[in-house]
Image (cartoon, rainbow over all chains, first blue to last red):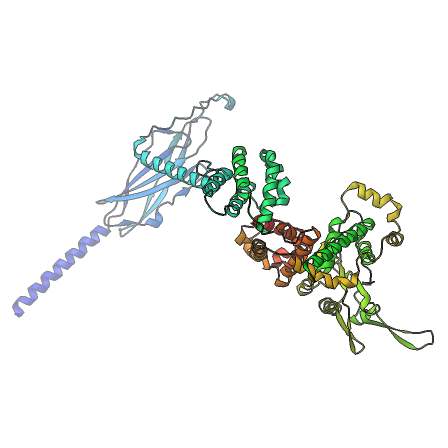
Length: 296
Length: 342
């Protein structure tokens, strides 16, 4: 047993030493800027500029805190988006800028340098990315005063297919129409659904009383209800002139209405007989239904 | 008393009452409605609170009423230092240099006192209100170790609405004792205003009142005829239901669809009309029907006295109480519009 123990220990020590040496050799390679896209395109105010920076890294990772944050970086540029992705030993940092540099002639400016930090690499952890020169052209051609500039017409909206929205639009319209009808009904503004006018309904109800033994009291009640409904308030005998002033269409019935209120008073308050009350109510309702009109 | 005799007696009294109304109307012009209400209160045996600006004719009206009614008339001015004893007696040193006690305005005329006018009642202290309440409720007062009765007495009071300093608001229980609160205002008719300004007969009130026929109404007989009037005027089932609905609507107006602009109707009412209040309303309405020559009540009789008998008996929550003057008229008008009969 002892014969095999020593060679095994030696072998394990050799493997461990080799692994340590390999790792040490990896750490010894620093992160390095491989490329940054050059920009040959000339930009104008409002353009988006995509800056791709590729860094080769051996086993390290980019420190997110070293990445620039979205937001304004100077008077004429702001960072809209920062993305990173890694493939093998390469890490790409993509920064999208939007520039607002207003110039009167061709000009060159620089997007500021970057300092990216990597962890787990040998040597200096920082990678310096040089500034990126960018060329600008004015929006207005040189030599043209502002007041002479022709503003480009608004670009028409892109045609979009209607088909996917059709059912939703239909549903929305149907719900809106339903709500509208409900509100109109609630406020009594739907004449079709409001039912017959008060005196027309009273006239119909009065005809149904024809065969009753004592139709005077119910007939009076029906007519009082029609009058109250027409006036929108309780109408008493003393209110007749005020009622006629508000509803001049019934002025021709003043005499009959006075007679009706007198008969109602005798019937309900003097507790007199109902002789002649029913025909009076019937006649009054019949004439009133011809004169009544819907309130606007 | 036979029915015919009773009818005849009632008809005679009605003629006298209408003559009384015409006679009082000669002294105060443009106040037909307050005169009619005072006449109703006289026959309904109720006390009256008058409200109105200074110089609108309240005192002249009451003096005219007192003269045409007959009996003794007394007037007291409410002041902050007035004490209950001042109404009952006053003491002084007589011409022989000896202290003397004399009956005060309430006792001076004994049973003959028929009209007692308490001017600016809210300037007097609550102790005085308390005495007045007893006189109003019981027609009696205790003094000099005995009870004094005033069977014909009718109390009229005037409340100062303008000033708030040194006044004591009359509690709701006290206001409830008054059958009516009447608003007396300067007539709106320009010709009447012109007459008040330029007709010399209105400039000398004493002389004006002297021209009125005194004692048109035999005041001693009014307590006997008043219950006869109440018994002679009937209230049908429909009318009773209407009056009940009106009462209920003063308590829960929202239940009757009563709405006022910008008012939370569920929070408006603190207390509706009292049972005593609606009872007084019906007493007054019966007299109104009798004066109109009917022996049955109609809703219009109640309308005639609704504002005057119920207005001071509906109490609002404090948040609305400050707007009382405007709101009470709106509320009662809306109730009248919403409650139908039959």
